Image (cartoon, rainbow, N blue to C red; front, side, top):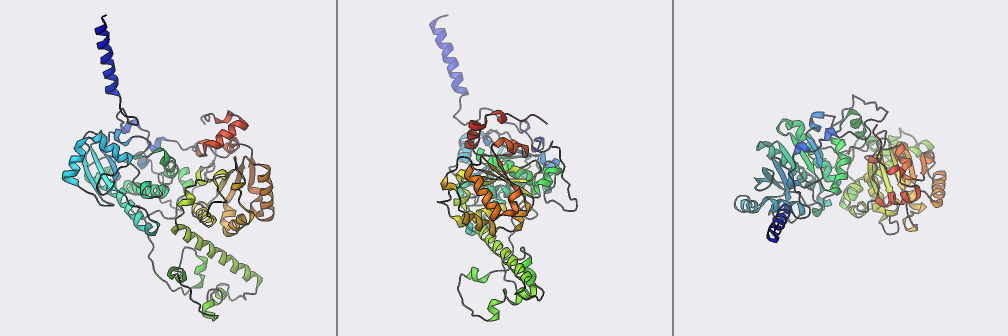
Length: 519
């Protein structure tokens, strides 16, 4: 063989390599929906466990088990531009030129024809609206463009309604256009300050309701997420698309109070001032009246007249059935009512204040369920900057996270791994938190696991549960390693930072980090 032939062969091979190369992060192959795993084909981690949960058939769950709907759902972490579907969704800005990774990738792969079509025919898209274009060089036939809302806590209701409109509008446009498969990215952009978990709730329930009403028009809905949002969707999908009656029953204790209207839209209670002629309204937290002093932000001194003491005097005497407020039993009842009212005020504050500086720390979150279907709350001690954090906001975040969870049985896993004195909360703050939380927190807490405890942790736990929280003393368990949690929950359900597992392996070995044997 001549050098010329060798050179030509080498050149041809090099050209083939360059032709097959694509930029880093670009999918080389087209992905077909039939090659992806459907939601109903993923067996819940606790599906084969040897226990049963009795389902109360008289209490209808708002999102019951439906295998037909589940088969339409796919959760996938990948490149949306590689999907060969009828339509992919582009979350963009009003000028349709948003510089976000997903949108930029769509324009890059679609080619110049997309920009030309937008310039000539579409031009713009208002927030909450949708526009549809051809897919051009994409594997997808069409692109549905939508503009998600900017999130501001002052206009939370407007943001939620607009986000719902985006998801609903995309699905409606697909239906009107005769499309049967749609790939949905995360429309609630973090770039626009939208809390990821709250956005996921709206996305999931909106899709669920649409499939209930118009399921025959859509065969496949693919939630295309990044690695950050994947964990959120894995946890929340079973709430809206339970894969069994057992998972449906477990979801009852985790579903938020607001499950939306008939189409999944947020429900905003009418803002009105109501005159209550029945003082027993204080026994019903859901029946709230407006606190004018808070709303008007005024400080008006009325005086010592009985009218100014109405709630603590006449109303309370009627509420207690005519008992004297000096009666010891009446005193206990009044304190319990006041305690509940205080908690309700804090809960309302927690739902309106901006708590991102606390939620962003990541030291407190829910991580799946245990083998009995009970939600597991994880607290990472090393990530709790006690001396630097706003403790009032920390309490509010604790309340807003736990309130929907503690309505049923739940467990807490506290990881004391590699904590320092900067992470140790004071006894006074712990006492304040414990006293603020109502009885349901103590009653429904079934276990409190302390993982990697130290001598200081054991002494603090003993002192606290002996003198301040005896109601939970028998529920606290110290565990020397992560593996001991696997007797009560599947390892697939437990999401913890890497430094915890790395530390655990150094002291306990790696024997239990192998995959679980199939049931």
